[in-house]
Image (tube, rainbow, N blue to C red):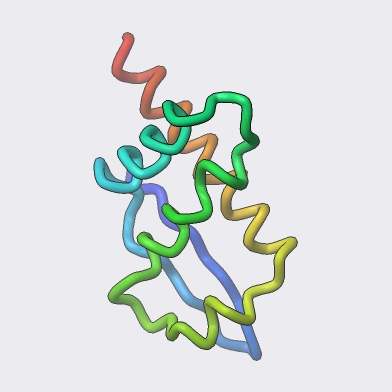
Length: 89
């Protein structure tokens, strides 16, 4: 199953690239640098990475609602935890 993020702005729906090893590494690097931070800090760069090369422009990213961005980070954190858990099975 491929995990993606979606974002809607001004009636247009944007879909990210699928969550992949690179996104997992971005989150993991941040997590290993400072385990005491929350999921938003660990995942915010991965959100940008997953929307790179899609229809999302920098203007859309810059004007993204913070609540939506936090929710995307929470979703990515769950993808990350799921990926880590599945590696141990």
